Image (cartoon, rainbow, N blue to C red; front, side, top):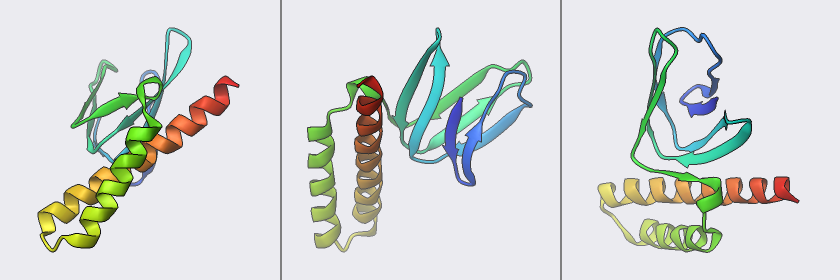
Length: 117
């Protein structure tokens, strides 16, 4: 499993040492039943307990196969509009987070669609 952390990509292998870390908005890649899976996540946390069990807690997650590029593009337009019009810091932070997540969705959707060809 590979996931985005504040210091870059973090790879968790079998028998990984116990770990608690912050996850950044980005892509989590893992293998399940021999198939590679890609998931776009928002900020959150990962916990690897001493027995090797991995728990991921994020505000939102979307599997690559469920990504709508059209919705992501609409989210980008809406976020950019909000960012250009607001003076409220909270709205700006939320718009920036939405923009970043939508951009990741498009990136992952494009990557996974090329892999299927």
